[in-house]
Image 1 (cartoon, rainbow, N blue to C red):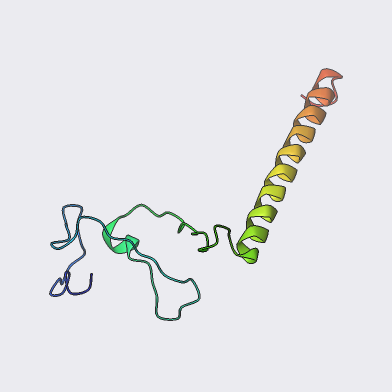
Image 2: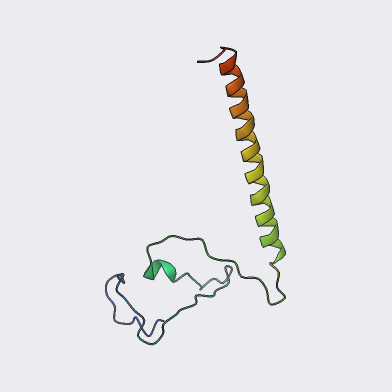
Length: 98
């Protein structure tokens, strides 16, 4: 990748194509101190990196816990929203709020 874009003194545009490859996979470890994502150099779409499973087929424990907490928090927030909406509808129906 670096050899293909050498000599570029301006941002890579939408028409930029890699001369030696049709596809580029940017696989890096998030704790590698010298690794960085290449997508922002090529695309303006800001997406979260995709977490790949290990060679055994599962995710590492800290990624499983992170996803579990994200799911739990989402469920709690949806339940909170439903309770707030029901309470507001009830208060409106008895005339305590406009």
